[in-house]
Image (cartoon, rainbow, N blue to C red):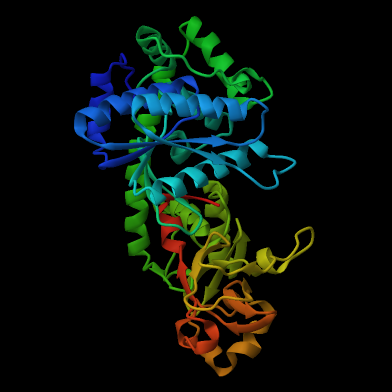
Length: 440
């Protein structure tokens, strides 16, 4: 819902009611204006509806004041009747891209805390202004319909290999001005984060541009948010057309992570969007490629027999068009090192394409690409693999102290005692559908 509304507890309750919240609700509480308003509104809602409310503040350890501000947020949460925890982002911080890394860490920590407390939804304080700024930034990058849809009121999110949780944004139809006025009316203080005024951040610069445009009645946040809402509806319609096209083209997902079609028509409506989603499904890229580039890559592969884009290998094989993980992206190539082995302890999100779990003793177990060891290891059973042989190299291999002992995504390999009950679940269909954001 993109229309700007006056903020009252009743108006907020109507938005949250529409999202059908669970009986245990978690919220993100930074201590800033929007999140403190969310705390007070959710606390009022929880009292009236009999819900249990949990609040989490993440101390990223990036500013000297962060610890004191987290304690201040904790006091506000307790006064509002919410159970509160301070979550700390520990360990090494990246030398560059620290804001993006902090965002991933923040969501990962809050999702894990919410699920540990038995909550089925995490509520965040994104506002109409946040929606407008997100849309404007994506416009500057030439985004298509999916990008212009910006944020939805409800999505699913997960921490690494964990189960997804509902992510709710009930403040998306309320402006920052509405929120400031309401907090002033109830006499509620909040923390001012100095980074919100730092012009080195793109969002801060965009905020200033939108404020100037709004003052001249040229462009408002409400209009941009309305555009995002319309783009979301259009994106949903296009996704439905692409799914129907996938079925018409004889599309098939495989448990080992590949996808194939028995035909391709680049001039069919929706084919460019379908190409984009299939490449994202099979490749390990964090983001889907540009639609036009994806369509060109698939068309070229259909004509010449092969191609690659976005970490995916596209191959004609036995009359079908296959989408696989590009082996060189994992085994190394010029300017890019090979993927390092990852310890297998519990559940592991591997290459953003598989969830790999183990039952029983896991000491010394690691996951790394099958790579060049695959033909010798599989032996005659390699003939049971239905896809192009190149697909084997980029599948997860189970190693023990450097020795390949299993291939958990290949069911014909069996589950002997040596493999410790290791199992791999492909996320290709999840990535194709795009319904879950995994923070790793």
